[in-house]
Image 1 (cartoon, helix red, strand yellow):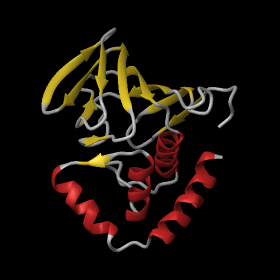
Image 2: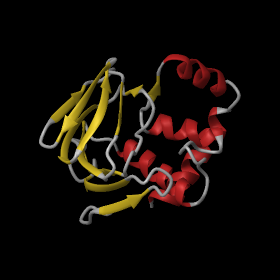
Image 3: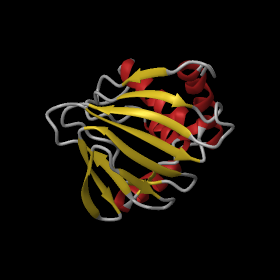
Image 4: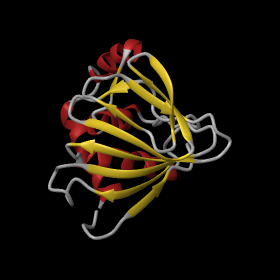
Length: 184
């Protein structure tokens, strides 16, 4: 990703649009700053947590629903929500109109940036289901690893079980292919 340009990517399945305002590389790893537009009645990722970074959401247009550590609340325009490492969360919109918020990751994460870019690229190329899940299990594992998106509950056990059937070297090779195809 170029250091001097903003880049916007679109997921045609989920109707999300993400603009990279500041990348990890641009901030020397201090943060990643993105603007996220969630389409009408849009769904974010399922419940998950991150071990490597804090997320901060600030609503700039509309409002969205957030689950944070089993508490559900509405994040309204101008409000900010901090999600610390290890806190289980998800977001979605119940609005009939697109909503926009800024997301900050501290520290920044080039791997997270790659995960989003790969996911949206797979969507564009027809490699996601209509519910936005990668059709190839290996792709899902790679995206989750890059994005430090750790599933919770039953999905945590399913991910652990599925990983047993994939060689680390094959996943590493596939990750390199995906990064070269979608992130360069």
